[in-house]
Image (tube, rainbow, N blue to C red; front, side):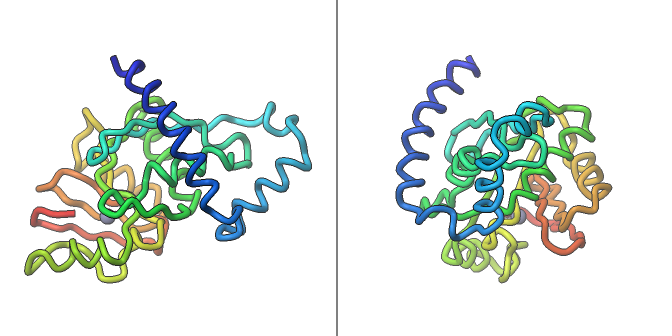
Length: 208
Ligand SMILES: [Zn+2]
């Protein structure tokens, strides 16, 4: 069932991703992505053929979409995969798309490898947030656990859950990688992982 759903989603995303790509003015907003794309064109397919393939299997809990994607081969991030991931991780309240820091994808990949689930599915609770969405979440209660200058607004943070893995275990694995910030939300049962400065916090209330 999951495969059938995945294929349906893939076709839809392909169409949607093309529209998004057309709206973006090339890759000028993301110098790294542009350079990598240029290098890939220059070096041909040899580097691609010899490199390790990095895969992510994602399911978004708000949009209901799934994405199975090879996003990196060797040291090259694949531009089409970046487009798909950026669209998948769009602000689910406003549909705005941003450019994720590819290091965030590597961090998720490392988390799954360290959990011993390299082909496991990551449930995404929240990806990119526009300032509007972040402010909405931050101000909807007295204490919400949402930072004013959240890394979600920089497209450098994702809130995740891994089915079958205790939230605390996921938190500990993320902390061990020292790849950025790790927020522990035991009541809401998710972990915030970002590629900002290395730091950690626990939010004892519910919220994201
Ligand atoms: Zn977060």
